[in-house]
Image (cartoon, rainbow, N blue to C red; front, side, top):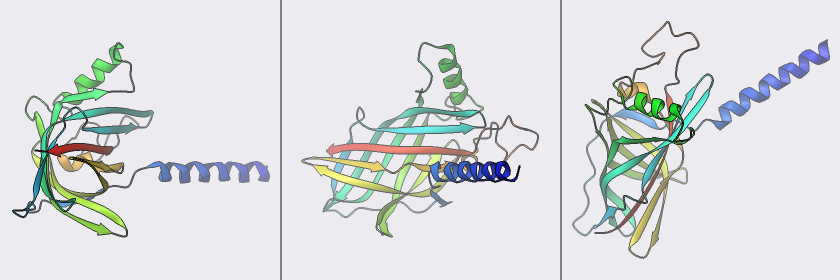
Length: 217
C-alpha cells in the first residue's frame, strides 16, 4: 500500500510539473504607454498580409482549441536592422479554428461563439491593434513592448521576439506567450468575473504566437 501511495504521489507530481512546464510564460502586462517614435532615417517595412498571422490557443478543463487570426495591415520602421516603431491592425473577423475540421459543425459553432458578443464581439470591435512602445534586450532576449488594444481596452504587453533580414524583407517571430483575456474584458466563462461556473469555466490564459513578414515599402 505504501509503495502504491508513493508511486501515485510521484505521478501526480510529474503531471503537475509537466503541466506547469508546458504553459507559455505570460507577457508582462501593464498600463498603456506612449508609442515609440522612429528617427527620420528609419526605413519603413510594410506587412506581407499573406505571410503574416497570429496563432492562438485557448484552454478549458476538458481540452483546448487552436486557430489563427489574420493581420489586416501593418508597418515597421527600422534603423540599422533594429525596429524603432511600428503598428499593425488585426482583423478579428478573420478568426479561424484549426483543431476541428472545417466541414464539421463544431468548427462553425466555435468560430461563431468566438466572434460573438460573448467573446470578442467582432461586429462592434472588428479590429484589434498593436503599437510598438519599445524594444530592449533583457537577459539575452529581445523583448518587444507595445500597446495591445482589443474590444474597448488597451494594455501594454512585453514578449520575446527574434528578427531576421533577407534582402528587402524582415521577419519578426515571437516566442509563444500568454495573455490574460480578462484584462481586455473578454468575460465569457471567466472565473475573474463569475463565481458559480464550477468546472464549466474557460481559462483566462490564451497563448499567442506572432509571425510578421514585412518588406521595404
